[in-house]
Amino acid sequence: MTAFPDLGAFLAMGGYGVYIWPAYGAALLILAIVWWDGARRRRLVERQLQALANQKSNRPS
Image 1 (cartoon, rainbow, N blue to C red):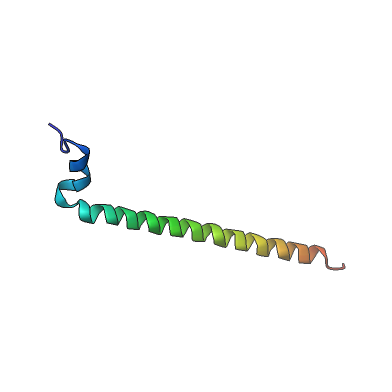
Image 2 (tube, rainbow, N blue to C red):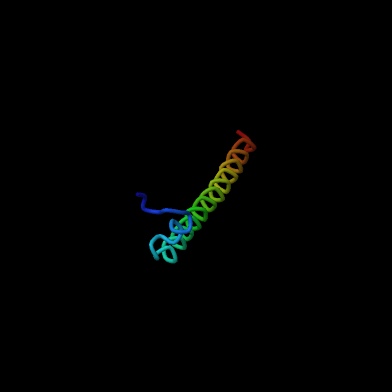
């Protein structure tokens, strides 16, 4: 005996699928946004550090 006899029953989650699947979707969306923002900020900081390094190397001693 299994808890979910078929895919439809699994997706319905005993009647709570209407609440569970959007919650999973929202969580995945938030995680994707956090990942994207972190990658964007990392690129920005790397560009700023490179600009500072170039500025320092171009200064006369």
